[in-house]
Length: 284
Image 1 (cartoon, rainbow, N blue to C red):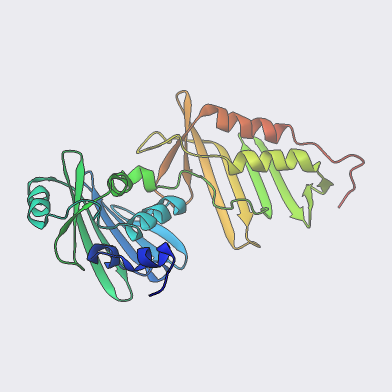
Image 2 (image 1 turned 60 degrees about the vertical axis):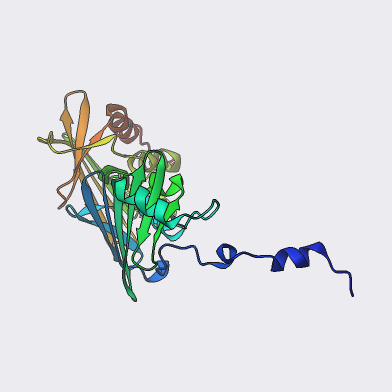
């Protein structure tokens, strides 16, 4: 007879539920190529191009990468709730009488897996194509799947992010501005520009983001912005039109329209007007 630590007993004292794989989906996140989500009467399909996600359906749209990755984490973490007494007949009955909440399909190199989620009162139940039976799931899964198309759309007008662009061009009515970066210096028409004023303008352009998405309202452009980045490989052109008290913007060769707060546009215009040469500016 020997005396052993209590944690040894605890590590061995497991029920079958403790040892089960509770995942309802078993896809490989790194090799995931397609995600289909049907919720709130809308079918949304995401396609992957290298490391970037794009909305494919209901129509091609730019996707917010963090929102799509959050959805994938929610699906990867979808687990059976076996904390209470498991009653397979009760779960099946609750699922069958519940309202359809969401259907998900995920495709990786091994194939396609599907999960249906239904809501019965305040509880959620799921049925997966890779495991038999119906299981109660956490409300967190329901929250993660209960999103609309706009929740997954990219609200930012520009994709250059926090990288320093190579060129910036602004056309505000009859006024034109062209900025070119050389190493860490910015130049305009051969004049070196004061760095802080340039960075203020770039920050305002970088922050341009939709307050909401609209289907109409763009007329004639009052402001045109062009940003070249990634060593000239990415050229983004945005036109902005006045629409009542707000503004409507569109990216070149894209159908989507973005409504902007007036203050965001006037901030860009003011920053462009406030640009100034560097002290004792050199000529180039």
